[in-house]
Image 1 (cartoon, rainbow, N blue to C red):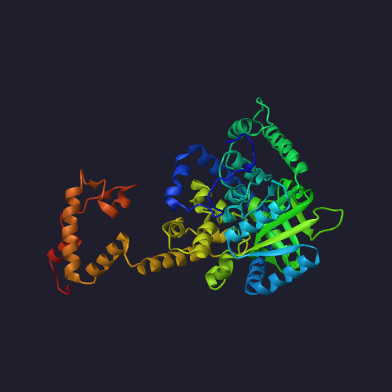
Image 2 (image 1 turned 180 degrees about the vertical axis):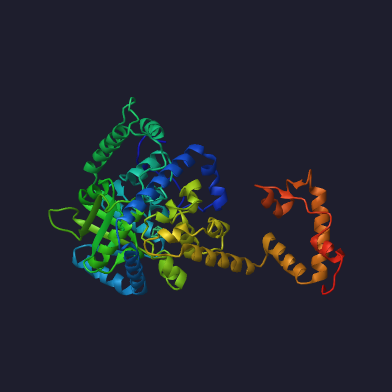
Length: 495
Ligand code: SF4
């Protein structure tokens, strides 16, 4: 750690693309072993659930609002090409420039090119949901640009040497104040060594640092929660106000957003603005809602660039499951009710966000060919809590089951079958014939009894060992049910 919140100024990776992912179970090991992290996650997700329930309970027409949100997102995605063309026209007419990025590497190239073209070697960043997806910080570093995150969650993550945070809703939520204080004293250049660990002092230290950065910034890179096609207006929701400063103070503003963030009209935006903050943090409205349209001489940035990121989204629209998943408005409510997320946090889910929708979007958009993406649809208990809270009514468990089907199909197509597939094939062959099945049962039971101690089997061999990693098995009885059934005394009528 350099002792500064900046990111970059020197190459930190060999390319702009994010590093390959580990499988979910491997990536989650660190979080599962971190007792303090799990305690904090449980406390904060519990609090967010309570806040959401209270905020939603205030509205008598919540279900109607959800239905309206679903309909708006469905219509938008069905006619995405037309809405994007209108957005491009509106942004251009308002004095901005629109750039199209087919994939993450192109988006990273475009953003770094736009920053370096200004001649400045530094940029502030504010609420960029796509930062992980496009490898923003790595790409800026590679280009020799020092990035200064102004979003508190990102600032904390970067001070700690980690990637951009996986969860957009709560700021740096999974860190308790003692750990934050220790991090600030160690890594924030202007934090006093006797900084107290009370929330007001911590917030003041972060504020002083960020203000200094923001006042000297000449270039900003931000995200957008929504983009209104009718007027070319970009909308940023946040709770700290740093994003608002970042999009108004620097002379050059570069906004990077997924093509699915477009909304056709302000009326549509009104519905989504009622749904998103209540679902995300239990707020009736986000504390800071910034909207800006193009450039205005003497007021705000004099140069506005909008980088529209596809990166698999338009391909995902081709099927019903893809369209349903892209309705997501990134509120994270599904994560806050998920029992898996509550134990692992967002990091193990990969670059497209944590929680159940991250487990859907990454394999859906990036495919299920590699083991890491294929592991994500299984990172769920399918309890259905996510579907109950989703403000745009995405049936996430249904999508996860469909993706599991795709994983199985993709494994079937491989020239060299996986050990699991071979096991399933041999089980299917065995069960297809009664004689084979009964012979396998008898031999299996004999082996199982040999492996048992005190009536329990503590460890099964090979692939089956995954079952006994976390539980043991009762030893099978000496006489099987089938043997007992055949040997039982027969009465009239029995066959
Ligand atoms: S899937 Fe639904 S609940 Fe989850 S983040 Fe997206 S909109 Fe929110």
